[in-house]
Amino acid sequence: MRFYDPTGKRYGVPTYPWRLAPDGLATRRQLRARGLRPGGQEIAAQLMWRSRRYGRRVRTAYLYRLDLAKPVRPMTAAKWAALAKANAARRFCPQCRRDAGYTLPTSLGVCTTCAATQALAA
Image (cartoon, one colour):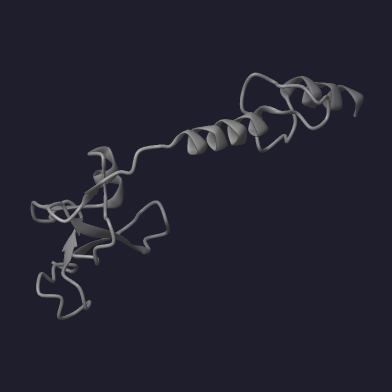
C-alpha cells in the first residue's frame, strides 16, 4: 500500500491510507463532532489519499489522540453577541439598507430584490 507507514519512517509521522487509521485517533472534524478539541497536543498521525476531486493530488488529514483531547470551551455571552452581530451583518443589504431576513448570496452582494431590480434595469 502506497500510504501505509505506521512507523513514520517514510513521511516523518505515522501515515495511514484513507479509512485505515487505528482506533483512538480522530481528525479535527471528528473530534468536534464528539464535543472535543485537540487541546494543544501534537499530531499523532496522518491520513493520506489521492483525491479524484482535486486533480488526483495527494490530500492529507491530521489525526489526534482521543485520550489527550480536551472538551470544547463553552460559548460565553460575549462570543454569542459577537456571533449574532456578524450574522446580522451578513443579512444586511448595502444597497437598500434593510435586513433581508436571510444571508445574502456572496455572488450577488445584495438582496435578491435589489439584484432583480438591477437585472431589469440593465
